[in-house]
Length: 492
Image 1 (tube, rainbow, N blue to C red):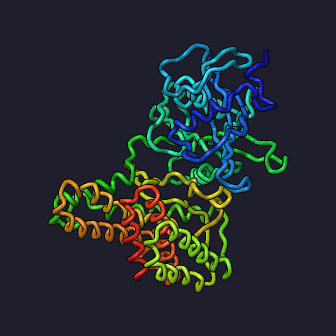
Image 2: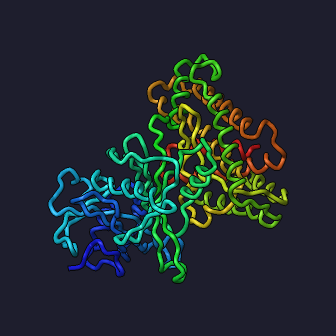
Image 3: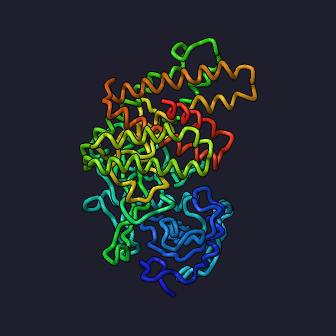
């Protein structure tokens, strides 16, 4: 029998692709639900080096999917998912919810396979591996049983005696907390190349920024077959500071709005939960993050042709969006005018940005705001998410989030008290206007150039159009929220 701890040189032939098809369809993080696909390859990239003694043996797999609803050369025709498996000889009833299948595993015999992220014994191996990496030269560790590499940044001693807890909820990745000490994000859908979340967190951590959760380490694997055989990295997970007592920025905003609606006679600045101060501090935090990103990553100035291309791309997205939501057509002329004004700017400075910023990407801690999840817009290819962009894209995303929060609470309260809808609408607009103004003033320092106003208006319009398409496809009853913003932007 072959030894399962030996790094594989060929794909495992004993694994049934249908097992992975069935399991992926049951997970919350699989992005291909509803699309016809087949498992085209399964690759075992390593055995976890730091696993505890005894069962389970933990093997990390990359599962390649090929979709049949697009052309074979389309960007989204093939996707790669990470599925770590914990192998037990006997059934583990506590893991029934994470059961994937059972088969004969070379070197182990018949095994029951479970998604390892749900198993505390398996997850202890990741933490032990990161801990062991800290004592290795350069903070990097691989061993003879794995083709994966664990990397550590200096400055934090991990507590390896704590239990792991898998977070629930709708996420595209899987996050595991280790006690109150650290948090590991495992990327489920992976791409060849540097992950921007790891890249940005490493740079900001080394810069001693207190506006992000500190990065402790990351896990990657070198795909020697990528890029025509020259090899390329695939980043699999990141370990960072666990902000256990932090509050989600979106939840805080909703609470502030509910507090306002509880007494409709009061104005936004009169209630105890007024969000203006938090919006100010959040604007200052983003300004600091953007300044650091501009220092640590390459910046450039777009020429007139490239600048015109920004507006042209926005116009193309508008045309495609109007086919999905015809209600956009009534405001298209005003939106195109906002996009056309971008072309008149001639040159535009771009830099590294967050790329998908909104209140849900922020955490409020006792020491201030933290910004999280620097992966960028998930729908974009990796190479586009790594490109410099205008920081006003991030600002626009946050301003749109301030507009959404009161509208969401309005809808939640409509059935309870329809008679108060008109007054709540007035207060909602007041809350959004006040929060946006305080955030924007703090971010810009209170002084914006004409070019910055033009860029912000265009990015706000582009974001509202994107939201309109999303709501049309996913929550049609909510589409009037972004459509109202589109109407206002178009009229302006």
